Every structure is written in C-alpha cells, then in structure tokens.
Image (cartoon, rainbow, N blue to C red; front, side):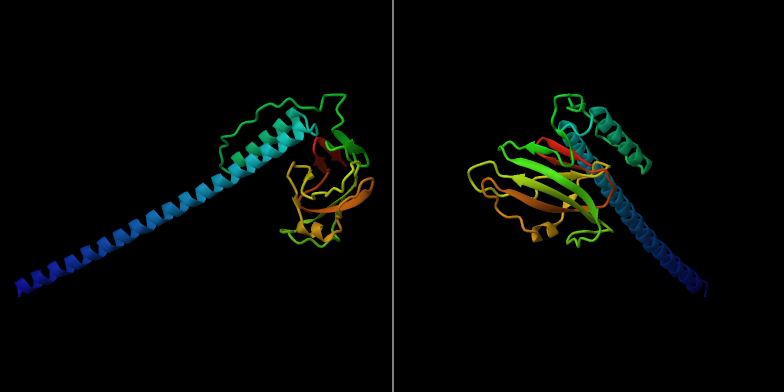
Length: 225
C-alpha cells in the first residue's frame, strides 16, 4: 500500500512539474513575443519621426534657398520640431546646416506678393493671381478633414512654339512649411497647350491640412499671401 502511495505521489509530482514547464515555456514565448512587438513598435515610431524631420529639412532648405525664409528662422523652426519630437521619446540624429540665404539681399526678386509677375528661365511670364482657401471644391485625394487650397495663376507664352504647363511644377507650403499635395481634381480643369503670345489662366487645387499664410514657389520665384 505504501508503495502504491509513493508511486502515486511520484506520478503526481511529475505531472505538476511537466505542467509548470509548459507554463514556463509559454510564458517565455509570450514574453518574447511581447518584447518583439514592443521593439517593432519602437522601430516604427523612430522611422516615423526620422522621416518627418527629413521632410522638414528638405522643405525648409528649399524655402531658404528661394529667399522665402531666413536661415535663422528656418533653423529655429526645425529645432522646435526636434524639441517636440523629444517630448514623445524620440532623440533626433539630424542637425541643421546653415545655408547662405537670399532673404537679406535687397536686389533679390524672389520674394513676391500675390499679383506680381516673374519671368521664368524660358522667358515666359508667370503670375500668381490668388491663393484662396476654398472649402467648396470637391477634392479627389483629401483625407482627415483636408480642404482645398486654390492657387490661381496666369502664364504668358513669350516663345515661338506652343508650350505645356505642368501642374506639378509649382510647390505650395503652409505656415508650418509643410508641402501641400497637388490634388488630382486639378486635372479636371482645362489646362491647354499655350500658343505663342497667349496668356492662359490656370487653376490648381491642393489638399490643405493646415493654415496660412501660404507660399507658392516656381523656379526661383516665391509668392506669399
């Protein structure tokens, strides 16, 4: 009887140990999976902030080089973004490199107001006639409550051949130096080939998540509203 009792206790002990082993293995797997997911999430967050800062550097550099923003102001804006990112636990590895900007040059014709005309490298004349927030326009690509920013311009063909205006050539920035996306609804407008001596009126639509004032760049020219 004692032998049977000891045998029963031994078997029960083996079952308990086996069960504990399975739980330990499962716990280890769950812990490993949780760690992996955490690392993946952390990696995604780092990539997100890094890409955002790279885009900001590119956009701010463009504005400085075109004379729409001073180097010091652009540097402060980028450093502020880095501080905001740091509050979310991201330590930036990027740094601002000073740029010889055009904003202090009195002879620069890059800084223009809406309604001013600029001569392009090809000799044509381009004028931004209006920059308007227009919530009535139905956009094709808008998301997260974005509304339309409408940019109206004219282009005069000073050459001897017909010319096509590419709607993606201008760039538009909001007050935070974000580049606005050209909405595909733009292509529903009539953008004809421009015959020599003809001035064409062109209307562009952008997905606008932010607020003004806005800047429109084309070549070295920058219009502000």
